[in-house]
Length: 307
Image (cartoon, rainbow, N blue to C red; front, side, top):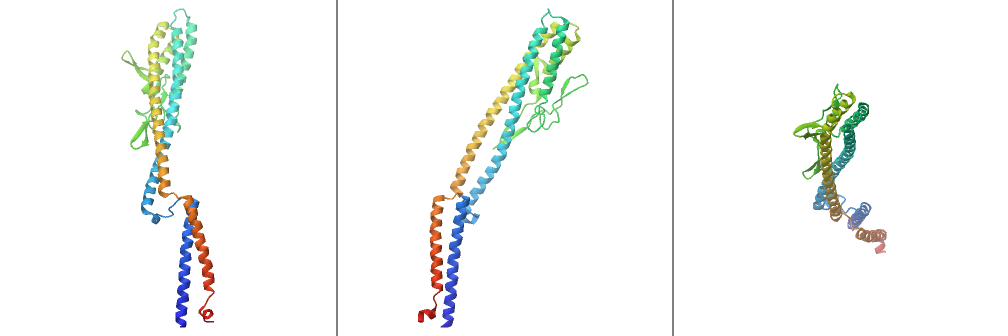
């Protein structure tokens, strides 16, 4: 009789302890859901949902990389657009000066004064052609170039960059070229002859400063090249604007996809707050009732019942 009583009492305690431990774990799980907002605390809770959440998380990580790339490309293209605007301003001024110098009534002294300003415009163009991108690299120097243009011993600008600008990945096989190389918009043809904008400006500046030869003719001869250079830079700005529009569209699409993933992540792994709170209150009530019942029952013994 004593053995039976001992075994029964042990079983009672083990069962009660197991039930309350289970209730406590369920309560803690619900508290964790409410605190984190996540329905799953470990993969074993729902393997299929956990696998889908991992896929969504990987997509989010890649999307952040693509977004960072798009932001960098946008920054570089905006710098390129602003720089080209400054270049067109400089070219427009050079055209004004060349038109003035083409006037046959000007004196050599007046043309020399124009020549000095033309030389300053050349320096400005050289500086703008060496504009740096958002990472401090030559914006118009192509891919991984250390410089875009350098000056030789005679002061002529020489392109030292690479043949192409770098392409930036936007995800899903899409890319965008983050800039243009200098020759793509500073080199052009006039009457089928290869021409360079900075060389045109420097040649005229040198001629006007020298004060010899047909200076009015030299000035008139530069006007076609300066007009062609202005058209070339304007066309390049259109290309840059198109790329910026493409980036805006791609970024908006990425934002929509991120919102869709966030919604799916909430649907798949998010906790129902109201339901979780209600279940927690229910579990707390059951746990408290179980603890109270255990306390009362544990105070009883077979001796007390027989007595």
